[in-house]
Image (cartoon, rainbow, N blue to C red; front, side, top):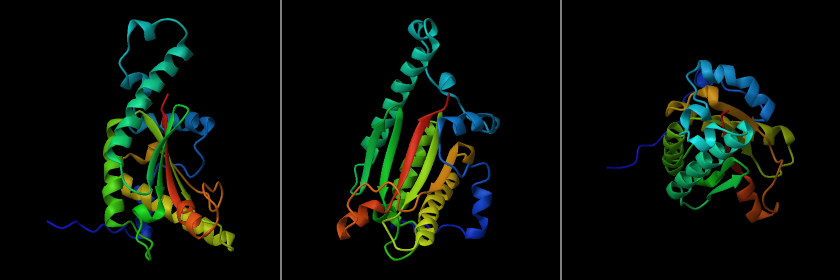
Amino acid sequence: MGCVVYHSPDRATWPNYLRGASFTDMTETSRIAKRPVFMGAGGTLLSDATEHTPATDYGDKVNNDNTLAVSYMAELEYALYDALRKPGISVQRAGTDVVVILVRDAIMEQNVADISVDGADTLKIISKILKKYNATFIEIAGYTDAMRDAHATSALSNDMAMRTAVYMTKHGIIPQRLFIVGRGAARPIAAQDNIGRLTNRRVEIRIAPAR
């Protein structure tokens, strides 16, 4: 049985899929502001998704919450790492957050602005895992290489981020968990030469505990 080719829905319908998402950086302040919307959409907080023990029910609440967050996010990191052993994909820890880096060519068609067959398979795996670890907020950030036209870099990075977000909402991720941003050529992770450009064109999915 052959792979089913995925096509992003018409751009005019994207607002329907992304209603409730935030189009801003996922900062601590923005997560706090988003929490009522997240909870109203059926979102789960870390304190409700983790198993409490006598050690975490007593003592300093901040330290206990951090202990729960570290354990929960470590499980998520391992689940993603084990499932995403593919070229052009990496899973990293950043404090209590987990970051999945997806090089553009690993998830997008080479000459068309759409998600590839391999990319759809990868994003389906990520969505399935994030549905299980649902006590989290998710930032989807698009990046490009250093192009001369700043407007083009902004448009392309936004397109990648939004296409990824639409796919994930179509596969069970509630948009109220999402922060979507296009950062253009900011924050390169490789040299801006012919090889490095391929790495700098990417989507980063940053996952943070919801608390």
